[in-house]
Structure formats: C-alpha cells, structure tokens
Length: 241
Image (cartoon, rainbow, N blue to C red):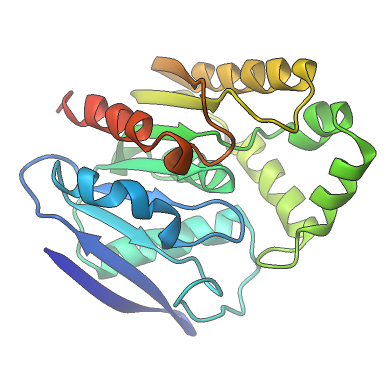
C-alpha cells in the first residue's frame, strides 16, 4: 500500500509517502542527507515496506515539498517532522533512520522526543565535530568543495548551527542504536578513512544498547552501494519488537 500526501505545516506543505502496512511493528521514519530527498531510499524502500509501515518525506524546499520561511536548522526541521507525523496520524514510538545530515536530525529528534522513539539507525551520519576534527584531514580542494555545497538547503551558517544544536542536546538514549559506517570512500586518504570510522564508532556512546557495522564496499551512499546491508540492519532492529 502506498499513500502520498501533502501536509500543511505553518506556511508551507511537506510531501510525504507512506508505504507498506501497519502490522503491529513500529513505523519507520527515514530522513535523507543534505540537499537530498525521499528518492535517496529508492533501492531499499520496497524491501523495507514488506517488514512494516515506512514514512519517507522531502524536507522543506526539496523534492516535492514547498519552501519554508523558517530557518533551515536541525531543530526547526525536527519540529516540522514532528508536526508532519502528528498530522499524518502516525502513532509512535518510531524507528528513525537517518543518512548523513539526516542522521543529525534523527539524533536530535530522539533527544527532543525520547518517548516517541524506540530505535535509531545512523547511516554514515555526520558527526558534530566534522568541521573541527575531520575536515582538516582532507585536501584543500575537498575542503573548498565541501564548503561551497551549502546552497541547496540550509546555508553554511545554518549547517554549523545544526551541528551545535545536536551537540548541545546530546543525551543518553535507552533505545537500540545501530551505527553503519561507509568503509570504502575512494577519495579519502587512509588516515581520513580510519578517522571517519572512529568518529562513527563514537556514536555508540549515545545509547546504552548500541552496535557498529562497517559497510566494507560502500562510499557515502551505503543505501545505493550495498542496499542489502542497510535492509539487513533495519530488519535486525525490527525483529527486536
């Protein structure tokens, strides 16, 4: 079953898609990376929707969603998502899945609404200390390209503000957490790849019940390079319920 909807949030509408059916397992809510939207899950969505009901959506100004006059920071995006879930009448607690920047949002959601979350999966998620700790290990060209990308959604200052918001809201969670790290980023020097995996591993501290897995043959988009790995991880979490 697939249901598409445009949901009114303050002065704009968010596009969302509900796939699969509620079978007593938690609903999965998925958030894409920076500048990405719901299409990022295309290769895995049908397999996951066989397991339970899944909500994918486009953040404001991306995909089919309208632009918002609200600031584009994680705290605002998380409030908008919470409003979307309420208006779509989806009952929690949810399993949250976030890729890259979407991982920041999902972590913040779990901190802000702990009673509405029963599981968290971070897919090569952005660490809060990305700029200070990781970016300096990369080439000047990479750093310049990285800093110039902030034109699709939040601007650079809003992105930095989002990192700060997630860092400040960090709290210990009591839900199962699975951290999935990309292990084969061709443009990363060996030291940077090792540091990236270490920084991903640090996410394990977020929850008292956490596990870590490296997708050995994946670059940043694990859901495209090794879709079966992401499907398996989600399946293993759903089976806990």
